[in-house]
Amino acid sequence: MAAKTHRTAAHPAVLSARALNRATLDRQLLLRRSPMSAKDAVAHLVGLQAQNTKPPYFQLYARLAEFDPAELSTLMESREVVRIVSLRSTLHTHTADDALTLRPLVQAARERELKTFRRGLAGVDLDRLAAVAEEFVEERPRPLKELREELLGHWPDADPLALTVAARCLLPLVQVTPRGLWGRSGQVALTTVEHWLGRPAEPVRELDATVLRYLGAFGPASVMDFQSWAGLTRTKEVFERLRPGLLTFRDERGVELFDLPDAPRPDPGTPAPPRFLPEFDNVLLGHADRTRVIPAVNKGRNGVGNQAYGSVLIDGFFDAVWRIEREDGAALLTVQPLRSLARAERAEITDEAARMLAVMTDATDHDVRFGTFLDFGD
Image 1: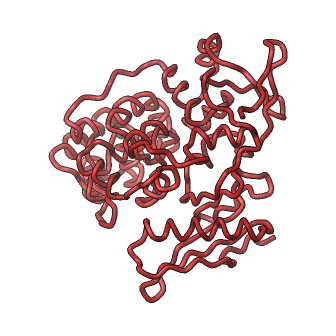
Image 2: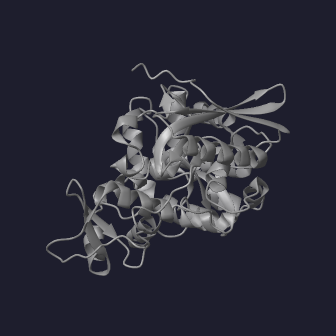
């Protein structure tokens, strides 16, 4: 049964945190595993957070029925998906089409980052730097060390880090395979997305279509939610332009939320099975107000310092962390609950963990335990 959303223009319906949770999980393919292909899922989710190489695979395992990591790996080898810095200046796995269209949308934001490095780039002609870097990485994909040394040869007095950051911000650079392939390793090597895919980037478009896709994967959502997800500012006029074709709601704090008229908004009581998410999963980062997935008491608890861990959704909310270790050839998955769990919850979590270990590790022996490996200093 769908959540009740009766409203008027003057008094839009109020959606509870639980109602927002179920709507978001449904669109994120986390209420039930989807039969869609890995490529279609990457497109539907508007990319997968990919700061590390393994998380995109675990993100798809949590969402897709019968997922085989080789499917995403094959898409990367065939250049149907790529790893590129895009939203929030963060490395994402995108379809080839999205890599060519989303990066131009956020290009101005990437260039604004260089203000932070202006001291290290004193005297550097940024247009020339872009031209030098482009020619260098299109000759063949280059490791970061080689790119840095080439740029230092032209600007020996500049800060080496600032030079490589500038190249990354000015050019749409992709990390080429074998980096990111399942079960393989490879150093970071870079070339331009146009060179890697053999076709030019698309002209910069209006944000309208991207906002609608965001709502389809993360909605209902506010203007600030979209801006937090995209790493952009001043997008209110886009929502105002789209308003006549959207529904509006309020959250429990009174913040206005926008949504697609035909998007699913399940009953808040809809069951949500446990899901193991990797570090930096976009469902945990896709809103300015993250309480629809992360209870306020657990804010910041999916890691300590710069070390992030996996997150377990229990009844739809982040209430445990997890990690996998190898012990004598066996895969040991430890779950650290952040609240007291009922016996049935522990059983469901154990079953889900065992299934994940069978698919996502090559170990023949698996062990699932509940324990403590993080000290939050409470």
